[in-house]
Length: 354
Length: 164
Image (tube, rainbow over all chains, first blue to last red):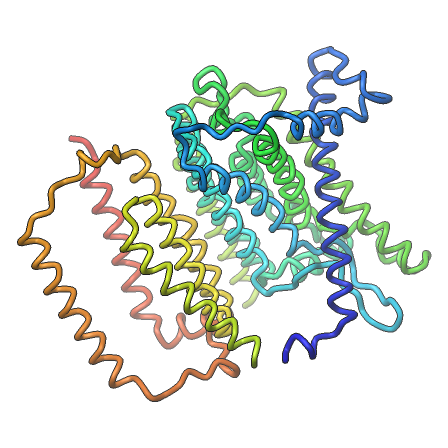
């Protein structure tokens, strides 16, 4: 009965939104692979992809076709079901997170308020954490099911790294939650309205240490350089996707770039004001509503692209950590810093309340 | 209500089937995976009871952290049949008896509780705001004591695990 009572328009609206977000993040992830190669090329004084289309812009398509056409190989000694489940889980969890991100402000369309967020659950941040912690299984199952020692070692590295850094990440977020007093991403973005109201509204400026800890943990969660120990070629050959071929390998590689995009969006949402920008009230008064919404979405995407570029610059600049250094940084540096930051934030919040 | 009921039955069947899978499957890895699926079913129940916070925390803590550690250990073990330890008859017997006694206790406890159906529409104790308030006012002493217990368990594990 509940399903019948639900508004048909509501379902259509959400379906359209989900489709746009899905294809949007797939498209951006595709071009992130191209961007990564271009950035690497520029930083190493090379040309990068330049043959497929102008500036090599068709390169991602060529890569995709290549991956699809390759032979599908499932090793004899692998656990077949889990071997296939691994990449599926990786892709699924990569795409799930974008459901709680508010992509833009509400607007009126044909007499109803349309919200640019797939699901406004009141525990949005925890949802992201839940998906993140389940995402480890994609890598772990894939690595184990391959029945290859290098894959297993790599997947164990990836999983232990993810678990270690999740702690510091959560602790740094607690400070943000205490400041805003809410777990809903929509509320957090609403509280960062504009840029300046007698003080910075963006959380990155009010909570710089928390932001730094969160940023470093994001690198680790994404398995990106300088924390890409799961893919240390010199030690582990290719890493946990050693035995994978064709589109299953493609799923793993692609999920990584989707994660990169979604993490950038979440970083901008939590710490850099989401779709808010300076002087937005003046702009809102000056332009029609649809244009304002588009500007807001574009602002969010610009911030996300900025973060993606930052991730890429770091990857091609810094060398890889050693494994003990990685663990030391996570457990002995980031967690204490995040804890102290949390306590100080708590004291300040309490003092302000009085 | 129909949707809720259908979801309830789906989740219940899933939870029981997966829980049986945990103890019946031969391969330890699939046992762990069944257990993870059971946790997801239980989280679904929490969400049906309007306790989203409990549901998501169940996933983060149990499915996301503890079971990953379980998988870790099992994946690193050598899982050949001949390395499996021989089960002692006496231990099996003791297991059956203690399990039976536990079952009896649970059954007796259920009998006294039974009869009052859980109201799953109006309760919102599982929402984070209410839960936090209750934990830090009414149950603040047990809450703090249990956190001290966790701390001592952690320290104990470190002391035991430390090489001399």
